[in-house]
Length: 305
Image 1: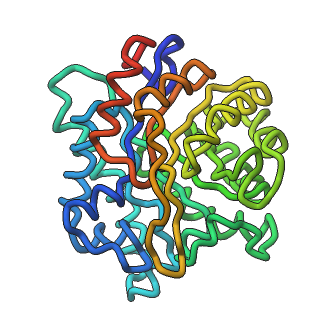
Image 2: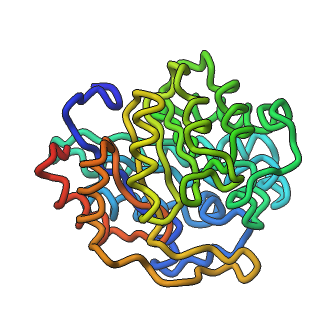
């Protein structure tokens, strides 16, 4: 069955892939972040996917979030090899899925497409407003999207998008590609990271047939409920929510600051997001397999696959 064709089911996506890779002892201080391991330790990426699948996730998000032709070139990796590595990110997630296929559960692979700011490795994805036009952003994203789509994922995850210009550019690129996508913004309160109203942000995807879900990720859990309501009301599409733990990224120190939002356990929070209208729930940075296990158990009664 195709992605999101389960009309009455809630799906659980994975947590922070980079967080899990670091917990396994991998150094991700390189500007390529988790994408570096596509060249150096691909088995570690597969192992992290397996940890989330075994915890109850049914969607694996690939290690391509911060992968870009510019970033690979800076490491001396040519265009052909960069394309091979992008495809390999999808292959690793599929291999992990195949390894747990004997339980009969349906699972999906989401090819991660991070924003332009992620490739800068300076925290720009939490600000947006890069000084590039919509056309320039579309040109930058196009080939990466084409390669990832050709690799055969079930869905493209356009994630952590900080502003309307980049969302508009991505909608231009994915038009007619023939693969479902989800679009999730990184937000601050009731606005995008660049300060635009969320109703305007979600409206960009409303009439784009390739977009099968909209929502938020890489934000504070406390911002999710209101955003879920807005996304559903504006677009009429299924809504997805996978926030961080509640800590914030300090780009200068390249570390996380603050404390996790633990007024409620992850599963209790996820049940609330489902009640608010979310069809896909999970986590982003600092969310571990144990958290996903809690989420999967908590939403089981709502129709969890």
